[in-house]
Length: 408
RNA sequence: GGAGAGAUUCCCGAGUGGUCAAAGGGGGCAGACUGUAAAUCUGUUGGCUUAGCCUUCGAAGGUUCAAAUCCUUCUCUCUCCA
Image (cartoon, rainbow, N blue to C red; front, side):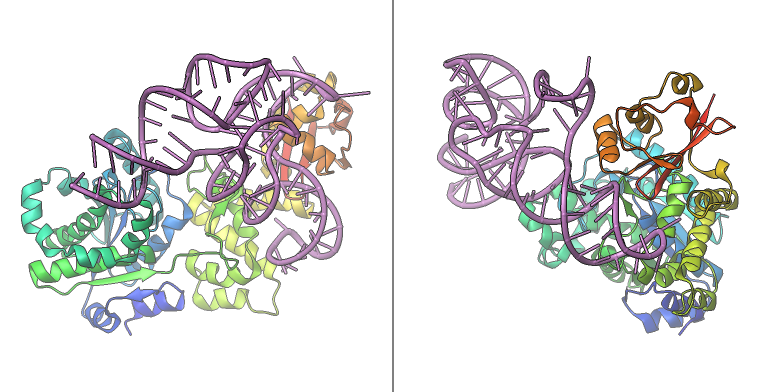
């Protein structure tokens, strides 16, 4: 098998391929241009979107050329695949600004150079599409009977599927065709939920151009307990540090289930395969492997400095030692402590509780720690004596959530 | 266009005049056990100036001492018919 595909396979990226042997032969002959699509439905990507982009980097390292396709056009409709309800339609302005910010995020990860890696936006051809021409040229190649047999649409037969969504597959197929024509793109990669759309595009190109192109999907990553990977209590793990702080991002990976460590090291880091395997060998301390996973991945997304900070902060919170200043920090006025800071307010202000009722529950259940003491009485305020000589204080909610309070 | 069904707290889903801040499950949070893991068990899960008060059951009105529950109108969704 072609080395690029071997790498993907070893690292757990292969789910389905339309013709693995054929693709391998094509890759043996030289650089293959491939594409990944990504709809700008939000201004930040989350980690689940990144699986194909990790594969992107592996393929590129093996000499192939990648296109990141921003779905500025398709997002105007919304992909029904894997969804049970129609997605909220977004305004064009919104989509444009989302696309721009996603492109920035991707650029940090991929470093587009315009030749071996570049972006395009399907808005460029979809937005001015003529309906009648589209039906004549493209629509006639699609069988409704066939489309209805796809899982993605069958699922929606229960809850209802609008005509606009039903067209998504045609548009995505058309994207593939356009990219084939414009850039000689021969391969589409994506999550396994895209399988139906990818196959449809492949067939369209065969019919219209008589050309053989390929599709490759990656497993939809879940944690070993079946949950969607990258979901936190607050929602998905976003790449935007303003939504998911690098510290929280780091902690998510630091706390993955033992069984997931090897798989995640292989998929979400660029450490050599051997090293990933060695790190997660049974005899070894899994926590070291988790720490490495967290650091590597945080460094990839947020940079080495942020990864170091997150690691130091985590060590300070959990290990003792480390650097306290790297912990999540909030600044509160000294005067409030002098006057006696009501504990419930303190936990809310420190961002550890979202309401006073929640803070009250925390205190009542024995989960609120102020400095070294479990604060068991919600009525006792926290005075300035709780602050250390630097005017600082460590608050803890439960076992894992910390905040360092500095006063000023 | 016609005939039905439905909209409940983060999600699913009970509830058809007071005992309802609303069963049950999921999820979340906390505690025990641990390894900042998983599994398990226990508690908890609208807000606040917390023995009390305020807001919530698609929206707006109305009946009633009292409504998620009854009436009217509206919005949206689904099913069947044309």
